[in-house]
Length: 194
Image (tube, rainbow, N blue to C red; front, top):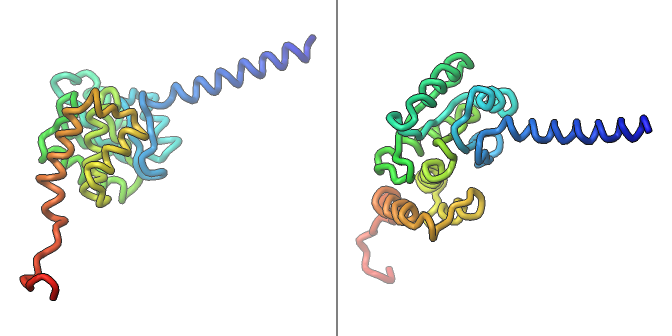
């Protein structure tokens, strides 16, 4: 009987550890590039500590709108400062359709930050804005097309092209205006066939 009680206690304890382990992670937490880039929802103080302790996060890229998320932003600033984490902010609307300058800046911050250590990219829920910034980084710094970036969002991060069609259109427009022109091969000026 004592062995059965001990076994049950171990199973319950293991379940609590498992549940506690997932509780430490922010909502919709995902690995983009192991050891370098992670993404998800707004991290509270405990989740930021977990990100730093377990994954070595040194920088945070926040995509939240200041006016809507002022309380969260203030807490994040205080916690980041206390933990010695760098915090960069690129506010976007909740649907992820940030202006192209903001998408460029967020993509550049992801590239620069991940070159210097692990970073965490987030918005409030870890969905549209995080999807937009991840896609912009893939297009601008990884050489991906808009379709490749959107396919990754769909396969790995729960992006639903039907429900989020306006964001998909926005990301394709970003690619067409900002990324594709720099990837076109220069014309040689020679007639075809030479």
